[in-house]
Amino acid sequence: MRAPLHTIDLIRTKRDGGSLNAHEIGFLVCGAANGSIPAEQLSAWLMAAFLRGLSLDETRTLTLAMRDSGEKFSPARLGKAAVDKHSTGGVGDKTSFLVAPIAAACGLAVPMISGRALGHTGGTLDKLESIPGYRTALSLQEFESVLRKCGASIVSQSPALVPADRVLYALRDRTGTVESPGLICASILSKKLAEGLDALVLDVKTGSGAFLRKQEDAEYLAALMVATAEASGTRTVALMTDMSQPLGRCAGNWIELVESVGLLRGERPAGSEDLRELSLILAGWMIHLGGQAATPELGYARAEAALADGSALRVFFAMVEAQGGDVHAFDDPIAFHKPGATRVMDAWQSGFISAMDTTALGWAVQRLGAGREKAGEPVDPHAGIAFHARCGARVEQGQPLATLYAISAELMAEPIALLKQAITISETAPEPVDLVSRIFTRETAENYLRDAVRYQGGHPI
Image 1 (cartoon, rainbow, N blue to C red):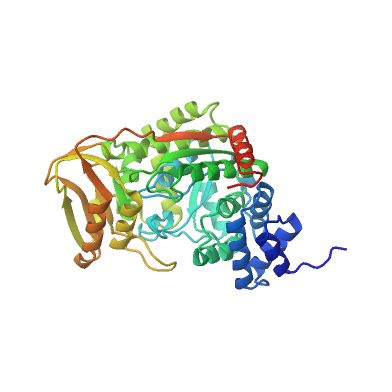
Image 2: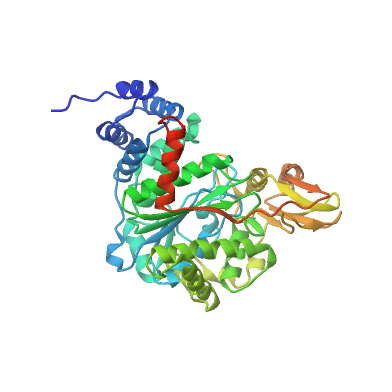
């Protein structure tokens, strides 16, 4: 017989630098999911975990306990390998609209549970809901039906899926305990592993627009997520990708979908080339890990072919229709785009765009109405920014740098001020930055973590 557990004892253990075992972590997760542990005690434990850190074993145990705290989706009946992609978030990060239909067109099932805008980062669900009629809240049965019909489905987290994460994340957001590698890992992977995935590709952002701006913090998180997911039996790889400027030409809601559909239609605008390239790289890894290509390079080739022959576009439109969306909005996407106010911002001097504070650019997009400061706030589907010049570009004074869209002209002043502060124009061009700086597989992730833990004296950073 096990002695009864008391939450206050578990708080003290973590507060004093101790580790919790699987039974103790399971007790906390169950209490979060069913409401038996009050919010103040969960918050105290989260702060202790934030300050003291979670061991590798604690992180893995917490991830699996959260995964198992509610219903789980089983894609086994689909008869295909189930593969997903997750990004840690950025500005203009719209790769989901490309990689999901590309991977599905190449024979995979892509069950993608996504999130909403919060803070400076955009939300996949908010962008999709700018399509008239598109439903993101599907039951697990509807989710499976769309996957069976289309091969891909992008939806919101259902109330019954990983309920512990919904409680703990809300508390982390209110108590300043978000930026913990162990807690981030458990939150992300518990939802992804609840999808019943065979493989997962992680896109971990680096640079001025990344959630974790220090390179070493982002690398540790990437390695931690790969090792944790692999330990659960899901083939996983993490790519460290650049977010020192917005991805592609547009940041917002509807305008990001227009840019993505343009690429699916075979368009190749210069300002979208980084978006196209990263999407093909991510999709190539998905196709490889899903068993549809012997190498990531061959997966890339298959992904590019799915763009060229229109099969990825057909999957995307089929998914939109299956989830209630009106695909005719894309017949004339410019006419459908009806912001309340439009403003063009010109370059205030001549020179090279040498740097962008992408987090500040994300806040500019949010202040135009495309994002939210608090959960539950409405967003404007037509708000956003179209960028006309990228890092390294030579611009002349008076040349258009960006076009801003908002509900009303009254919202323009602060975003314009943010853009002027965020964009640096210099006499010399910056050094180019690699789109993908590092790739973590299971072996490299485990080696990295051994070195990191050893360096920290046995405690993860």
